[in-house]
Each structure stands twice: as structure tokens, then as C-alpha cells.
Image 1 (spheres, one colour):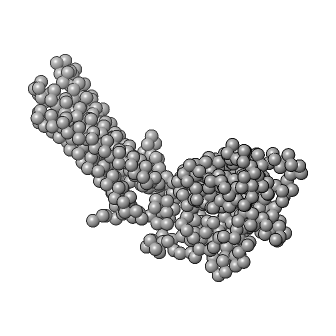
Image 2 (cartoon, helix red, strand yellow):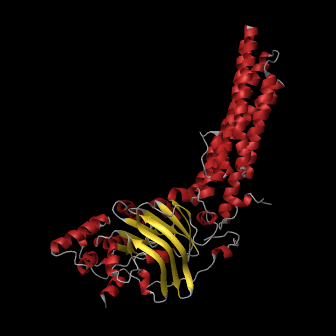
Length: 240
Length: 298
């Protein structure tokens, strides 16, 4: 049964148009769910030294790419057929942009999986995995909340995600410092630590993409672009 | 026929009938959305208005078709009026050159100023007003005369040309401005009703331009035209906006989005919202505007 929030896109005179917008929305969420699990499994593959799982993650990325193409095509067709306006237009435009973010998140998952395979082959004591776990959990919850904010058109939740991004950056800086000390302790750690740094970097990027999605949700709901504006500005927009 | 009637018929007032006002909200079960009378959201006012319209009300007999509307129309602005059928947009447009005068049961209240002159002043010369505020209609309505005579008609009765050569110049200039000269120059003596619909409409625009108006009112000028002819007329509107103030009533929201600087949304005789066109079509302020432009009713 459609919820109250779904009605926002579901009450056009044209039922076909309703269906198209709903389908776009649900396909985007489906892609979001897949990408979320990709990141989750990539981290698990790394921490558990599971090369097989990492291979699966890399293979699944093709599916993510295909979903991006399909959703873009649907969005293009909606523009061509319906010339959407106002909130419908904002939905379609936002989906086109957010799909690119999701696809990039998928790429980051693939990158992590690649390092997981490399590191598991080298087979040494894990260094920096605590940090990976920690930041990984954090950005995954941001990504999840961003998709949830999109599903429920919740601009306040989106704003909370924008604020979280600063904390991820701080955690990333701290983890980098920790890894630097490992490297200084013993130069034989450098190669491994660099790989972990790349993984942390990838996770930090996932946080950025979650944040981009959150900004688009605010645009969809409030009609104002809060990209490249200070959080305080976004706060005012959401408060309106 | 008096001169007034001649002019009125030249621009075609007779064929219109009054559409009974229905409530699209009720039909769409949207009774929860409330419109406060006289309250327009957005930017209804301008700094240097061509038209200054305050507390305008129009009655057809007992029916109040326009309810306390205040609006400025800026100089050299293209403003479009949109809204569901029966919302009062055409009625309001017709107030601007007193086209409603010919409807007996129609009464108008409020202040309507064109460059600080009261349009409805009892001494106002309506012929002069309509020369300043020209009009183009939904259906092209050329006279059953030659192309040349159609364009020359207004300048002749207003005495704008003393010599034949002056009149020739006016006809050529008007046809050029209307983007019709190349198609029409070799057949100026041909009967106008033999042209295509799109050409006829551009001829009507040329006829409106010929008396050097300051404002051009367009009542769904493209609804009887094919997409190519529509694109031509829209192109023309963009060019004309440099020298004229243009008010256009349209049912095509894409057209409003394409041609106008500001868009005004009418609903049941209320002026609900006036805003920059870009704003109206991306994030309108009023819930009703949003519902209408996104195809939720109308």
C-alpha cells in the first residue's frame, strides 16, 4: 500500500505518469540497496580475509553499472514523454545525479574488494583493520540513512547526514595518523599500510557520496540547492 | 457601424462565450487547499510597471469572475497567465484593453492603470487604448481581404499614413517583424484566408503590430497551430519582447516556461501566485500552482 509520502508522486491525473515516477523511485532504492551491500561485503571480505567474497563483489559491480544505465534511460524517457515540472522535475533530475553517486560508491566497493584480494594473498597480520571497520560502519549507516531520507523525503534526516560528513573526515584524519605511526615503526609495513590507506580513502569517499545524496534529497523536498553551501545555510533551508 | 464596433470586430470579440466557473479542486477532491482572497504569493509587483492593476474585480451579472486581483506588468516584460479552464485568465486579459466592454452583463471594479492613465476612465478613448494595447486571438482571424489590406487596415483607419509609400513601408515593416515578409512579399494581393494557419496567425500579429502598439495581448495564440508554426510564433514573441510588453494566456505550460519572464497562476478567479517563470516551473511557492503545473488537476 502506498504510504502518505508516496502519494506525493502518485496523484497525477495520468496513472501512467504515477507508475513511471514510482518505478523510477523504487529502482533507485533497489540500486541503493545493492550498492550498500556491496560496500558491506567488501569490508567483510577484507576483514575476514575472504578472497572468494571479494571476487563476488567485483563481479556484482557489473550489475550496478547496468542499473545506472537503466535508471538513466528511464529518467530520460520521463523527461521526453512528460516534461515534468516542480517536484516531479526535481525528483527526476535528482535521481539522475544520485545514480551517478551510487555508481561511484559501487566502484569504491570494487576497489576495496581488489585490495582485500591483494592483502589476503600477502597474508600478514592485519594493521588498521579496526579503523576500516569503524569508518566503514559509519559511512554505511550514512549511506543507509541517505537512501532512507530519499525514500521518506525526510530533509531533516538528510541534514543530519550532511553534518555527519565532518565527523567522517575527522575519523579519516585520525586513522591516517595511526597508519603513519605503523609505517614509521617498521618500514616493512609501508606497502600494506598504503593499501589500507587507499581503502580508508575509498570509505571516506563513500561518506562524501552519501552526503551528495542527502543534498539532493534536500533539493527534492525544499527546491533549493544546498550543494557547496555551509551546513548552517542548509539548516536554514530545511527549517523553512 | 460605429468606429468602436469596427475596431472591436477587427480584433474579433464576438465569438467568445462565457464558460461557467467550475471548481476543479472539488472535482479533484482537494478541498483542503485554501486560497485566501486578495493574497497572491510570489512577486506580483514591479518597480516600473506598464500596467498597474489594483484590487480588480470582474462580475458577469451576479457571478464574480475575478476576485480582488492586484498585479503589476513590467515594461517590455513577457508575462504569461496560466490556470485551468474558467480560472479567469482570459477575462482578466480582456480587461487590459477593455475587450469586456462589449459584454453587456460584465462589470469591472478596481484600479487599472496603463502608464498612470486610468484605462476605465469615463473619458478614455477606447479606440486609442486598443491601438496602444493590441490583441491576438486563439484562432487566426484575418479579414477576407488581401494580405496587404489586412495589415494596412489599422494604419488606414487610424490615419497613420498620409501617402501610399508610407503605408507600403508600414506593411513591409510589420510583415518583417512578424517574420512573414519573405513568404508574403510576392503575394501581397492574395486573399489572406488562403494562407496556412500559422501564416494567418503571424499575419494577425503583423496586423496588431501595424498600428505601433505598446502592449500586445495574446489569448492562446498557438493553440490552433502545429508545432512548427508554434515555434515560429514563440520565436517572434522573444524578438518582440525587446520593443513591446507582451501578456500571453496559454494552456501550454511548456510554452509559458519557454517564452515568458514571469508566470501568473490563476485559480477560480484568484491570482494565486506570480513569480519568475524559472521559479514557478522548478519550485513553485503555492501548493495549488504545484498541483496544476505537475498535472495533478486542471
